[in-house]
Image (spheres, rainbow, N blue to C red):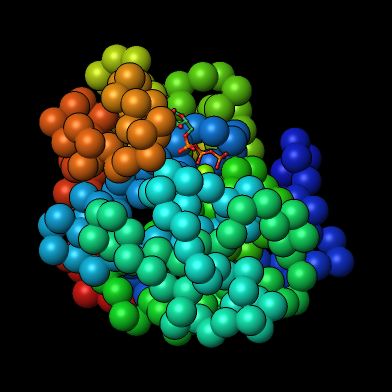
Length: 283
Ligand SMILES: Nc1ncnc2c1ncn2[C@@H]1O[C@H](COP(=O)(O)OP(=O)(O)OP(=O)(O)O)[C@@H](O)[C@H]1O
Ligand SMILES: [Mg+2]
């Protein structure tokens, strides 16, 4: 097992560590995460959910960005009940599951819950309980996590069996993606991690970036088995002005502009996730 990377040390000392194995056994819980913030996790989660729903799957998106939740803004939802109410005992979990415009279900965190940017036992237990109760009802659960390697992010990622890292081609995004991947390999014993390159400038960007990151991982990051961590390129989503336009209108891109290049790329990503993850029976 490699040592915890010195670049950014995860603030897990004194708080519960993420599980070495996913705490919830299912092959379809996918954490959408990133090193750097603002790279498109929420955009990908929401629109991927819509694309998977269109393919006939039952999908839940859980806003696991507890401190800076904004899935509600992107989906133009004003939830009466959020995960915050569930955690504080004001409502039960069933009331927090609401219908999103794309035909999928969401559990929203409630905005600005700064107190939940720390991983307390309460937050940990509630996240785990929420997923354990809800996951069996869906074909796919997407966890829209916060950015970086805080203990809340690492814990929510530890609940997923698959990790989809979103990165942009910017050097800062790639450095942070590498740091996050390194921590996940060390702390969660991940054998592989999936990568989607968002805001790609040119076709082929993502494959080249994946190759470069893989080379660095091969040199510096070993998994528990001693094998290098395998990075799986899941696709590229081009930089596309329609994305911002849809966000400004608080609409899903898949509904607002289903034929634009970014929407077509998300649809393709959904197809790849379906064939690689959903079509297989749960382990
Ligand atoms: N493919 C794209 N083309 C153009 N703009 C994009 C694209 N993807 C994302 N964006 C822009 O980036 C913004 C941030 O995206 P998003 O909120 O999904 O990032 P995030 O990773 O969830 O951020 P945070 O780390 O704050 O949770 C969007 O509002 C949109 O304007
Ligand atoms: Mg987000």
